[in-house]
Length: 423
Image (tube, rainbow, N blue to C red):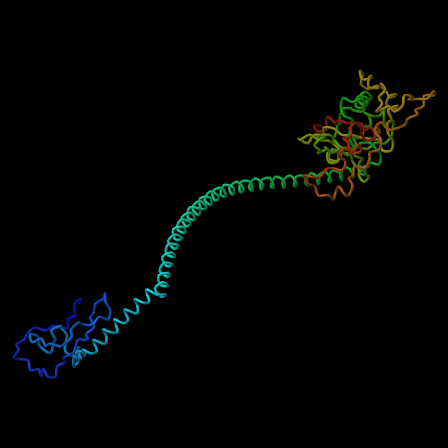
C-alpha cells in the first residue's frame, strides 16, 4: 500500500551546470522521514534507497526528501539460507498450531468461544430487559411528577384556605378581646355602682330607699291627698323668704317642728335615670342661709335653664307615720281610695287601739325590710371576667333582685318653688 509522502521544501529548478556534488559521499540507504499525516501517526517514508533528483537544486532524493533523512548505507540483502530456515520454522509453527487446534487446546478454545457466544447472548438479553425496565422507570417517574404537580396545586389551595381561616380566627380573636374588655368595663362599672350604693347605705342608717315615691302608687297618692306635694310661691330669693313660705305651706303637718331641706341629685343609672336621689343634708350645712344659690347648689332639682323644678324637705328629728297622715286634714279631694288597706304600706289591720292611740309608729318611708348587703364576695370581685365565666349567683334564689323604688327618706315633703326667678 502506497502512502503519499510529505514533500520537503521545493525550490525552483536551476541549470545542472551549477551543481557540483560529490555523489560518492551521498547516502544510499532508506528514507527515515516521518510523514506528517494526521490519520496515521509515526508513519515513515517508503523510500528504500537514496536516488538524487538532478532537476532540483541541492541534494534531494526522488522521494522529495533531503539526503540528511536517508540512512548512510543500505542494508545488505538477506542470506538465502537464513530465508530457508525462517520458512521451515514458520511451517513447523503452523503444523504445531494445527495439532493444538485438533487436540485439547482447540477444544478448550472452542468451549471458550461457545461460552463467549452464550455470554454475548445473555448480555444482549439483559441489555434489552434493562432497557425495558429503564423505560418503565421513566414512565413511573413521569407519573410521580404528575402526582407531585397535583399535590402542589392542592397544597396551594389548602394554604389559601388556611390563610383565610387564620384571618377569620384573628377576627374572632379580636372580637373575643373586645368582649373581654367590655366585660371588664362592666365589672368595673358594677364595682363602682356597688361602692356608690355602699356609700348611700352608710349615709342612711335606716332601711328607707333614697328615692321619692313614684307617681301612680298608693304611697304617692296618700302624700298628695294630705298636702305633702305642693306648689309654693316664694316672694324673694333670700333664705328668710324661703323658710317662711315652706313653714306656712306645711304648718298643719309640721306643727312647729324643725325641718331641713334634703340634698337631691338626679340618678344616672340606666334603669333609674332621671329620678332624684335624696339624702340628708350634710350636718355642716344645717342652719345655713337657705337662699336661692344654696338651694340650687345642694337641694334643688333644676331644669336645663337653671330654674328650680322641685326640692324635698324632711323634719330634723321626727317622722310621719301613715296613721298620722290618715288622721291629718285632707288637702286634695278624690283620693280617699288610696287609704284602703295595702299590705305593703299597712302591716296590720289594727291601726288604733280602743282609746284612739296609734299603735304602729313606723315612718311612712319605711315600707321595706332592711336591705341585704349589696357587696359581692371578694372572690367574685377579684375574678377576671371571661366569656366562659358564670356568675356564682346564677340559678340561686338568693341572687340580687331589682328593688322597687316606692319609698323616700322620712316621708319627704315635695316643695315646688314658684316665682323665685322673677321676684
